[in-house]
Image 1 (spheres, rainbow, N blue to C red):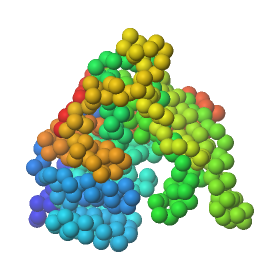
Image 2 (cartoon, one colour):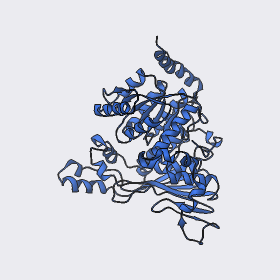
Image 3 (tube, one colour):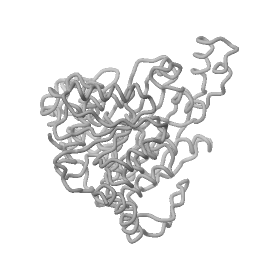
Image 4 (cartoon, one colour):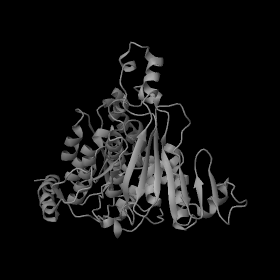
Length: 455
């Protein structure tokens, strides 16, 4: 029997036994949280054996997945073994990219929407990276971990509470990383704010604002970016903050969520859902199916979160209306505050030149520049989203190769992704407060906050 089959048998049989031995009965579930029959043992900053070469399989190499694929071609210590996509032309694209880069041609998997299962069962992979439509993130990650691979997923990492628990429990059971790849954690200004927070510039944190405010009407009604209208269909089916992690990922790191602090509950409200129907009428006329559709997603969804240590966070989702792009980034503490949009401004009491007046954030940029940017911004030039995609991919591979905990782990990913389902529950209940699940089951009290990591 081959080593591959021995490994697969061990992960499916021995790993299951380990999970059963470590499991504890669920009790005291949070209001609104699905009951869990078995829960694994929480892991503080999972450490796995270092990998000299990270053997990677990609699932989904479209718009965002293709960008990550290109990043991995540039990273040292990486071998892209396989690529899976429902479109054969994307398989060929990926294979040609590898050949042009002087790398071995990856094996292609394109026999239907669930061919990732065959890939995971067949190949010996260290990491499976998925950039598929949202409903496939958890199935791919779970299959990867069950068959012995670490998992990384585009955002949101999960879109239901049950899925959030599923990735947590599977990661614990098989002792595999499952990372929600939130690229905005590595954007220049968000890293700057993290360094400022760690150095105490803002004093005790009080409040933050963030979100995803991006006019996606052209993308939702076009086939180029979201084939088969998959993102539009979520706007038709669900009224929720469907995309909370771009803003909330960095804020959660600043506030040490799951690592000394936690979110307690949230309340959501939404505006009417008018923008998509208006856009459909303009594009297709009154008789078209899309013009008659009952869109559920409110044009503006606002969610207010309360943390255990008292901080508040406002998260806004706005993708159906005409507007400039923004992630509404603001951080406020007892000594001052700073913002990213529409202009990068800061005010620190006793330090800013004029009382009660904003000053340009650039005055603080050199002193508080995050070491990751000092090390990687030159390498990251030309990569997606201003280079932050490259930095997040670099850090994932670096942690796997050095056998160190990832910057964001499965508990962080589940927590920021849970806002999708929790906001939906609050909206459906006329903005009633909804309790936040504790995916660490109490370990947040002793888990250490993310430090200022370097490359």
